[in-house]
Amino acid sequence: MVDLPDKRTAFMDWYLAVVEGARLTDKRYPVKGMNVWTPYGFLARRRLDTIMIREIEATGSVPLEFPTLIPETEFQKEAEHIKGFSTEVYWVTKGGSTPLDVPLLLRPTSETAMYPVFAIWIRSHKDLPLNVYQIVNTFRYETKTTRPFLRVREIHFFEEHTSQATEDLATERVASNLDAFARMARALCLPYAAVRRPDWDKFAGAHYSIALDIPIGEARTLQIGSIHHYRENFARPYEIRYEAPDGSQKYVHQTTFGLSERLLGAIVAVHGDAKGVAFPSSIAPYEVVVVPIPGKAGSGDTIAAAKAVAERLRARDRRVHVDPGDERPGAKYYRWELAGVPLRIEIGPRELERKEVSAADRLGKKASFPLDRLEAEVDRRLAQYDEALYAAANAQFRSAFAVALTVHDLAASKHVRVVPWCGSEECGHRVEEAIDGSLLGTPEGGLPLPLPKLEKCITCDASEGLRWALAGRPL
Ligand SMILES: [Zn+2]
Image (cartoon, rainbow, N blue to C red; front, side, top):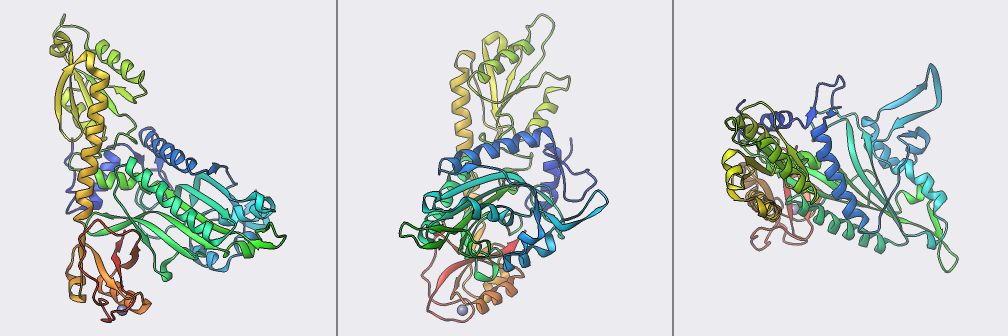
């Protein structure tokens, strides 16, 4: 057993120790920023995918998959987009030993792979809307320090691309994506802020971008997803047009919605504590671990009893792991707490004799209950555990923000700052200089905080066009 670094004062050391200790990833693969998905990490990722798929398909999106390689000629069609990605792209320039006529790149995202084909698929207003998504790996040559799940070079990526007949319908799609993400985040017990990025920080080629941000260790922020409205910005260079009912030719309006394995990093970062990871039951590789405790000879077969308990729970579609190994029980408890399993069930000779089980959830709540109430008690205790996890995450989320009304407040605060802003780029940059960070943008739909009346811009004192903005230091 090892002591974990302190989460509050040494967040990143804590994070790295926890993801490794829980065996979610193996970073010893010999390419920097490309980590191995271990079996335990893979199971968590697959749960995450299941939640994303459920919620996006509920909004009418359908899955597909495009190739990994994109020809340079297609990539270059949207000028802002290529400018935004030019330093991050991996190139394939040879087939065997033969130089390729047109160099290929590994997709950093798939606009430029999909849109030439959308231009073939979309002919008439009857072909719209086109709402499709894929979950694939994307590649970005990241130059900052890489961190498992948070900043990697091969990214497990969810991307929805939609084409709509009008700008208003594309705006409605953005709203529908925000609703879908709200449901995903609720399933993950994850509070977040949807923040409309300032123009100088929007996605390359977008009309506007809404980022999904969370506060994370030591007054930083983490972008865990984004939704973009492209208007006709890609449709024009890729010539994605349709024939309207009146016979005229029109460009489609497009949107995208992107999420990644960062969500898994966020779950570790938000819910984890001094003992390790704490998974919400929705994403836990195992919701329940059953630990048999051996007794004296003749005191009964606790391993067989543990397996019988697991079978009953699996029959109810619970994900259950039995740990009959030779380690002493204390070492097993430590290991499964580090790995974040929501509920542990113990069966020893005493439990066998009384026809009951002992249970402890990952937040430390303990109880014993009769074996004949097993299924109902497990349902109830997992639901209570998820609620407690969500309540704690919400309290942590609210306490991460502080209102700053003056430039002096800005520099002094150890929080994500909430500032009154006039909307000008110049004032935005002055805020960024004061905190050595970013003006993240304006929260959509407000913040769960008591805010004073808007009176004047934090830097220029203007009283016109005021809105609240978030400012912080992105991880
Ligand atoms: Zn101002």
